[in-house]
Amino acid sequence: DAEITQSPRHKITETGRQVTLACHQTWNHNNMFWYRQDLGHGLRLIHYSYGVHDTNKGEVSDGYSVSRSNTEDLPLTLESAASSQTSVYFCASSGQPYDGTQYFGPGTRLTVL
Amino acid sequence: GENVEQHPSTLSVQEGDSAVIKCTYSDSASNYFPWYKQELGKRPQLIIDIRSNVGEKKDQRIAVTLNKTAKHFSLHITETQPEDSAVYFCAASMRIQGAQKLVFGQGTRLTINP
Image (cartoon, rainbow over all chains, first blue to last red; front, side, top):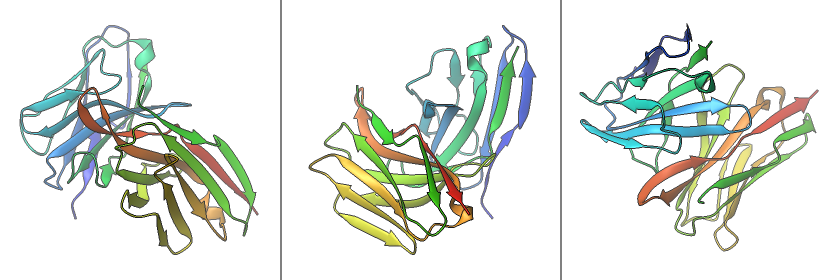
């Protein structure tokens, strides 16, 4: 069965370190998304991609970057982790760019000390 | 700016009663409105969606209504059961800074009391 996975599921890091969160999907979807989830803010879009080599900024992109070298993967990098980036991160993929079902990964809980 | 407002933030109902969650959106061109359910510690999952050419959609105990004139849409859950306890998110497709995106509301924590 097609699926979307994230790794690691939990990560503790220190301020200033570079961190990369992995997202891998086997749906063969062109569209992939990264969200962060914080209490009271719902799901906020960090970056998204509509195809290989395409990346776009979401509403809370500062301090984050993504790259899309193949259809299956969209890794999220925190260039220099900050305590404000402590959050739960969800990756999602979809067959449509903005008007179709988004399939979410299991999430990564990141703590920046 | 363009956003989606969701109310209430928390909702507690007796088992068997109905629950209603409301969302308003700002972009009159929005045309896709999904609802996601997120159980504790789990990922969000789509439970129902509606497009702008339809005013209402039902799936067993859940229904969504859309009022394009007023720019609001609602989730209705009837005959609530304990397994309905979760956080529910609405979303709307809208154009932000020249690009179409799906924007989520802040979420409603629904608790079903036995």
